[in-house]
Image (cartoon, rainbow, N blue to C red):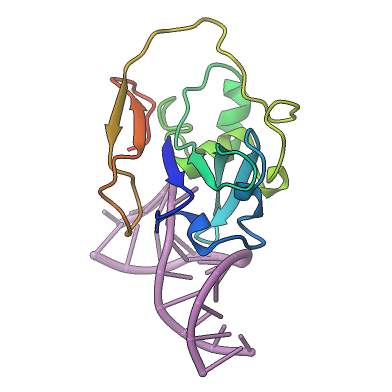
Length: 152
DNA sequence: AGGATGATGAAG
DNA sequence: TTCATCATCCTA
């Protein structure tokens, strides 16, 4: 995942202030911010700051633990389990997430953030963010150390 | 290394 | 109404 700050972060969508597109980012936390990028893909964020304040987290990858057949059907090109959702665009394809979920409540659903079935301890590693030009060296990308499913 | 592909924000 | 830009992925 990657953090995008509300103020001073030129790489963040919220940099341009409150617009139609960024409205959700300035809304209450625990909601999905889904945006369309490169004319083809959609990316999922979690709003992370109190209402009136901008700040969100881009979900760049996930480890599939269920629904394998469905995810493979949505991403026929995926050659391996690791490849299924190891990138922000791949993740939304595999999960069937579209802009219709923009602004959706992540507690109420239909898209929900849930506690894992079994809690596994893990270490978090910090790296620069990926695919941006501004503030590219800021250490705001967070990965699970040693995990095979992180985005490249 | 380059192409697919369209919304967005800022400028005119 | 244009225009550059873009938090990507895939094939070569």
